[in-house]
Image (cartoon, rainbow, N blue to C red; front, side, top):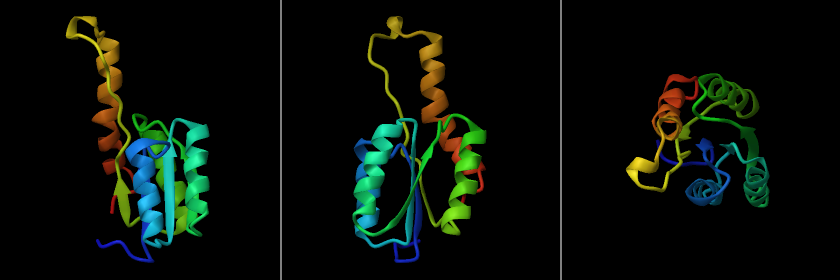
Length: 129
């Protein structure tokens, strides 16, 4: 679906980096609304302040994308606040540094829960388009 003045975007991992840049880019296109989510509350608020300066309706949501319940709550809140979801951008992701022998199974499970599980939870939620 093309981006328009009726678009409502949900962007995970929007507190910094690519997620923040995507949110700002969507705002620059004059969309109807943007819902930004992340686990970093302070930086998420900074992203929302930047978007609010453009006049686009913005909502913030503290969400761990590896938790289906939190992603479902995000989607429910977005639909309640903005009316719909037209664009879902699963941007949240993490990385690990170190040699393979240095990484624990817990590190691997954490990475997979966010980078793979986060995509799955959003696709299974009511945010799907």
